[in-house]
Length: 297
Ligand code: GRG
Image (tube, rainbow, N blue to C red):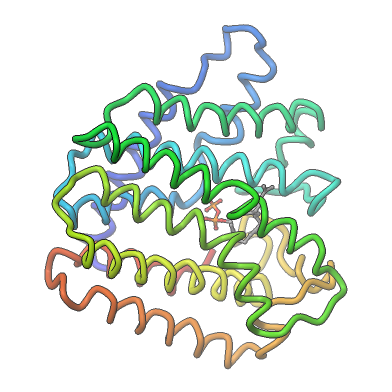
């Protein structure tokens, strides 16, 4: 990673932290325990990959940073909610997330459930109360895009497939279908919402960007599966080896580690190709892609 990219990423991560800190309800406001749990689940952790993608796509489209910050925060809130719910005993039943006890361990199950619910609605509150696009039609379309990416036809639907797949043998296309929804849909929304904060990109360019975002959504998951096999709990900040322990089909269980790594490289190449027409303006998106592929946690 170049120093230039690292500085840029640190700046974006700090910007999103400040914004989320200001917009999450304070802990002296009732219901205090719920507000404490919301802040616990969101602040001071995570790689903020989805916000980095929104900022990089925003730069590509020359979008207003204040608008991009709002959509990046909304996507990160949806992501944080999904992690809180995913860790619950009725789902993945995990005790460690972002290097600290999961929300239901630190608080309790009912609070964790309400935390996820409240983070999700806060995301849409942000999108509804700020100007994100030049036209109201575009803004409504952006909000619709995030609802679709989060719900039963996106992330929540992918999670349902995931829960249903435990102990089963999936084909590669079935695994891909699951991850396009579970992980890919929100990553796609992060990219596209960042770009749509400006109306600079035409339909062809938006389609190219959409293709890019589908490739990196899958690449992110392939790398996640490799890390779940190879990295330690201490490095990941979440329990390593969970997929095998839970008898879940993964890219590693289907392809083996070496072919899974090759697939991640191929997807990076496809993502790069999708950006070919953008030239230098897509530099940040290429750097975030490299970060996703080379990450160690
Ligand atoms: C509960 C509706 C609902 C959905 C949950 C995304 C998800 C669906 C569950 C998370 C489980 C998981 C480990 C999925 C693999 C990919 C993934 C989303 C990893 C975590 O994202 P990172 O690495 O996490 O970006 P940080 O902590 O860095 O933000």
